[in-house]
Image 1: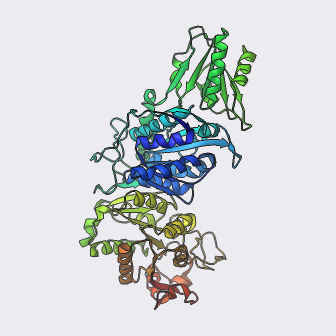
Image 2: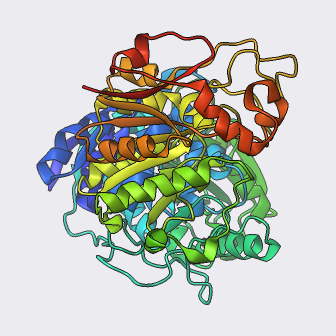
Length: 369
Length: 253
C-alpha cells in the first residue's frame, strides 16, 4: 500500500498494525501528531486512548495497561522523555513490554522545540538509574517510521523490555511516499502462561508476559525480586542474578537486535561514513556522489543504536583508515565507534537546529581525503 | 482465620513497627472484600513507595503492582482503562499520594475514574526516617522540622472533593467498623472513591510528639479516639472547623 504520509502519522499506523491497543501521552512538539493520530485510530480497533496529566503519568499508564494485557505505547520529545525516565527504569526492572517514541528536538531544556536534533542518544541509553541494557531504533524514512515501530513492538514483546524509537523533528514532520507493508510478521503475546513471571535463569531470557486478572496472583515490583516477584532487597546474590539476566537477555541476542546496512563497501574502501536517522539520508547521497567520482568510500547506516552494533567492526575492509561520523549533536554515537576501532574517527557535528546536508558531508569527506 | 485465603502466608510477619496502624488497615480491606464476596482474582492492588505501599505488596494473595514513588494512580489508570472488568484499588501513603503524586490524585478524581484510592495517612515519611510531609500537623516535630512544622497541613478529603470525587471518607484505624463500612461503600461506588485513613506511626511521629500522641504506641492508637470528631452530615466533613481535631465521616454525591 503506497501513501503520501507524514513520519509521525506513519509511526501511529505502524503501532496499530503491530497490535498496539493502548496509548497514553502528553502533548509535546514535535511528537504530538503521533498522539493525535492514535486518538483517531485507536477507537476504530477497540483500543484505548487517554491524554494524561503529564509524561510521568503517561508512561505509568502505559505500563499499567501492559500488565492488563495491552500492547502499549507513548510518544514524546526530549524534555518529556526526561520526565518518563524513572518509570522507564521501572519497566526495565519489571520486564514490561512497551514502546516509547522520542521525536528529538534541539535542547537542552525547551531549546528549539520545532528544530531537529539527535541529542537524546545517551539519554535513552543511560537516563534511568542503575545498570541495564536497552533497545533503541533509528529510522531514516517515513516508511521506516512505520516499519520500525512494528519492529519496536516485536522487540518489546520478545525481550519484555521498553523499546525506543528515536526519530527527530524532520523525520516526524517529513511527508513522502510511504509503503505500508501489511505482511510484516507480528509477535503476539500469549493468552495465558504458567511459567514464572520474571525470567528464565537457565537460559538468561525473559519468560512470556503474564496478565492481571487471570488468577495468577502476580507480585510485580520495581524492587529487586526473584522469578516469582518476591522482593529481595537485602540479598547480594538476588541483586547480582537479576541484573545479570536483565542485561544478558539483550547482550546474548545482539545479532538479532543490533541491525545495520552497508553501502558501497569494497575491499579497497579507504574512507567509511557511519550515520543514522535523518542524517543518514545526507550521508548516503554524499557517499554515493563521492563513490561515483571514484573515491574509495563506503557507508554504513545504523538501524539500531542500542545495543550498539559492534559487529560492524569485526569484518571491516582492512584498507579503511578513516571513519567520518556526522551527527546532529556534539558527538554521542561517535564515542561508541571510537571504542571499537583503531581507525582515525572524525566527527562532524552540528547543533544549530538544522539538518546536516549531503553537501556538507561531501565537503568534509573531500577535506580529509 | 477467615482472611487467610487472601494472604500469602510465607511473607508474614509484616514489616510494620509496633503501634503501626497499617496492619489494622490491611485487615479492614480484606474484611471489606470478604463481606462483599468480591473475587480477589479480579482485583488489582496498586501501591507506590513507602510503608503503606507494603500493605498489599506482598501480603495480598492477589495481583499486586508495587510501582514507583507517587505514581500508583497513574499505573492504575492504565490498568482500569484497558480492562474495566478489573476492580483496581490503590493503597499507598500520604506522602506518596498527596505530595509527589498529588497531580495524579487530582486528575483521577477529575476523570471520575472508577478506582478506589485508600490513603494510609500517618502524617509523616515513615520509611525514610520521619521527615515532614504535607499532612504533618502544624508545629509537629519531625526529622526535618526539629523546631516544629511551620506549614499548615493538607486536607486530602477537601482536595479530592474540589477535584470532583464523588465518594469520599475519612476514618481511622481505631474506628474499624466505620473504616470497613467506608471501604465497602468505596468498593461498590460507581466512580472515583477516596478514603483518607488515619493510621498512627509511633516510631517516626509519636516518639517526637508525645504531647499529641501519648507516651507509647498503644496510647497513640487510643488517643485517636480523643482526637476525632464524627461529623453528622456529609457536608460537615468540609465545612465544620474544630482546631486540632480530626474530622471523620463520609461524603457521597
